[in-house]
Image (cartoon, rainbow, N blue to C red; front, side):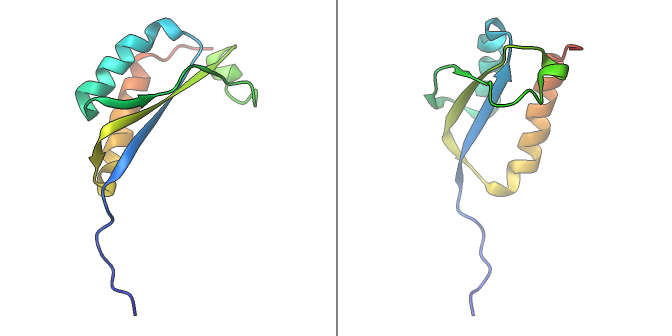
Length: 95
């Protein structure tokens, strides 16, 4: 029988979804203050697979993925989600 064990540390991947690319440097700085240096940063990707977010965020939408250098403890994911939600709240607009 297998024995439960603590999960291995994991790479933190953050997805940025926006219509305003100009705000990205500020968001990137905030994320790096929280999670450390970025190991890999994708280019901007057109987010045109769905219209689900358009009512809330407008269009066109763009996505960028960030992989952080420092590994995280998987048990910290809930706190990380709360931290990123707080950053997201700073940039909310109505439609």
